[in-house]
Length: 184
Image (cartoon, rainbow, N blue to C red):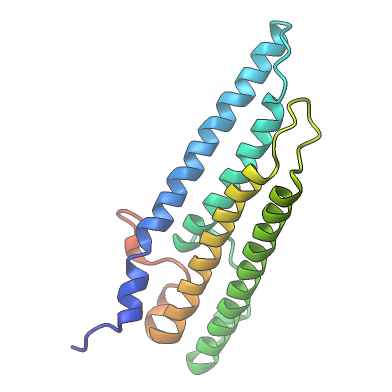
């Protein structure tokens, strides 16, 4: 039995990061729920709470971005595999690698431009147009962190497809250890 390459051992150590992103996303979902309920109750009471609806939108966006990497690594993203499933052997492996390379490229592009957006918002001191006038770089930076985690997960998946050919075909995105009690 040969030892696993160092890069794969390093990639295995990233699993807790993806799980942590899932927990952060759950926290944002809870915050979103609380903010929406607060908004509803304040309106019923006739009290104006400026910025609550805006904060709820930011919580939804940040939660969505943080959920992407965990969902991708646990195999929860919708995968259109009509063509790939018709291929076998080397052709299927090539198609898997191509698809994962495209995914990694798009995810890196998204992370880069999300970071650029946050950077320019910070540089110019941009504020939201809502009643509270929040600094836009704060929620944009959080969303950028989630997009960066997705990019890392996509690169992880691509490297695994390149280095673990048979396992990559058996389990397109999800690794059995990524889901507690899960199956590959």
